[in-house]
Length: 79
Image (cartoon, rainbow, N blue to C red; front, side):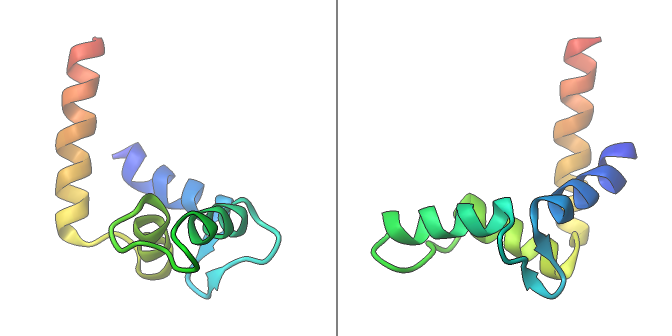
């Protein structure tokens, strides 16, 4: 539960916001590096693309379920 609230906040703090990628942020640097590595574009499905989608639209129900499953399993394994 905490991760589902904290993760979007952390993504926003990196610069992936609802209004797009914030200038001068870590997100902007990540996007620049990804674009340079891919010949000018950001590859669909890449970490930058996924974080940008989450920052712009928030988590979908599928993402929440997936994160809950992954984080729950990780918590159980570490506990």
